[in-house]
Image 1 (cartoon, rainbow, N blue to C red):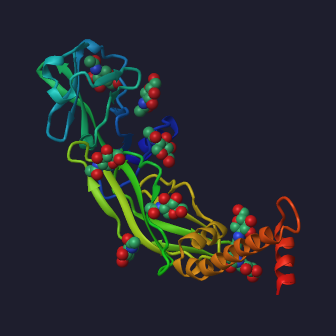
Image 2: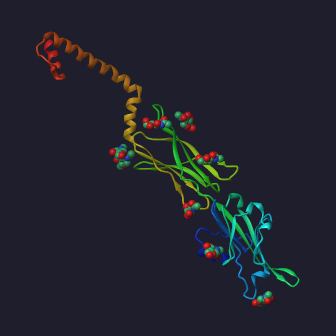
Image 3: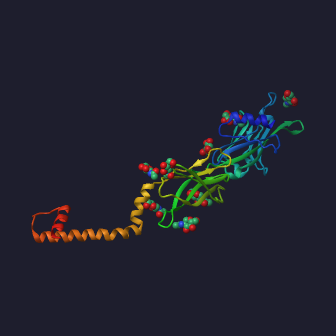
Length: 300
Ligand SMILES: *[C@@H]1O[C@H](CO)[C@@H](O)[C@H](O)[C@H]1NC(C)=O
Ligand SMILES: *[C@@H]1O[C@H](CO)[C@@H](O)[C@H](O)[C@H]1NC(C)=O
Ligand SMILES: *[C@@H]1O[C@H](CO)[C@@H](O)[C@H](O)[C@H]1NC(C)=O
Ligand SMILES: *[C@@H]1O[C@H](CO)[C@@H](O)[C@H](O)[C@H]1NC(C)=O
Ligand SMILES: *[C@@H]1O[C@H](CO)[C@@H](O)[C@H](O)[C@H]1NC(C)=O
Ligand SMILES: *[C@@H]1O[C@H](CO)[C@@H](O)[C@H](O)[C@H]1NC(C)=O
Ligand SMILES: *[C@@H]1O[C@H](CO)[C@@H](O)[C@H](O)[C@H]1NC(C)=O
Ligand SMILES: *[C@@H]1O[C@H](CO)[C@@H](O)[C@H](O)[C@H]1NC(C)=O
């Protein structure tokens, strides 16, 4: 029974995960493999004790009837194996599981294992098993990059978040903005790019976010994949309240324009006082600012 088989797989394997699809035939096992790693295609065959390997023909086929592997009366038959599976399989004879190496996205789909026995009137089918192989690729940790800073006219920053080389398409990607007192989620339409060769996806979002100049903020980018449970979160992108104010002093023309005349007049007064003092020659050597101001007062 499919359900019993599935439960056995669940406890027996680490990398493989099992899914129940009740609409499928009960005998189909759902198996999961990671991109570029190894996938298991179990046959669940137990060889009867009164039967020798020399009487058996065992082989695996994909959904297009291409042969992955064949064991013909105890001997491997590589000449029957389809080119796309040559050198990519190995049989675990203890539990009749075929291992498919370097799994690609296009390897997802239905596989079937067949066992035939040589009888007096030719080969007789004695066992077969279907396996549905899912292929997953973990997305990379999302990365935030700044597109444009806040300006004098706008407290918005524009940013992009990117995660690469995953499969299948993720559920969603969104931005989380944390301040001391608040957490705000920003959803955006995901841009999805698929590589023609590997069929892996890159996803990104681009957003314009209001960032209050008074608060320290931490921005995160979260990706929710479809089949793996774990949500992926970017490193925090921090914007400090203080550094924003310092930056504004130098970039805000309004402040520069109002402070420039003040600075200029202070310099003028100092230079003027020095000249006056030198003429009077009351004190030899350099003097400091307060004495300069005193001298000026006496003059007036
Ligand atoms: C078959 O046995 C190997 C170890 O001998 C194990 O790694 C693998 O998970 C087993 N497969 C199944 C389907 O039980
Ligand atoms: C092996 O034993 C089973 C019953 O356990 C029987 O049905 C089958 O025909 C036997 N096979 C051979 C090759 O004797
Ligand atoms: C944004 O401002 C910071 C701090 O002034 C600066 O280091 C960074 O290069 C700026 N980035 C962009 C994209 O303008
Ligand atoms: C996906 O991202 C990777 C790594 O940044 C890059 O090499 C590749 O070209 C991108 N593919 C697509 C289809 O955008
Ligand atoms: C930031 O994004 C908004 C909305 O997409 C856009 O209108 C604005 O021009 C962008 N600002 C900069 C400086 O690129
Ligand atoms: C921002 O963080 C700094 C320390 O990183 C802290 O000294 C400052 O008080 C914080 N400012 C606000 C507005 O929370
Ligand atoms: C957060 O809340 C506290 C208490 O209500 C307040 O004093 C503080 O200014 C708030 N901080 C920000 C960044 O809004
Ligand atoms: C993919 O991620 C899952 C959970 O997040 C983890 O268990 C698994 O080992 C990862 N696989 C690979 C190949 O990195």
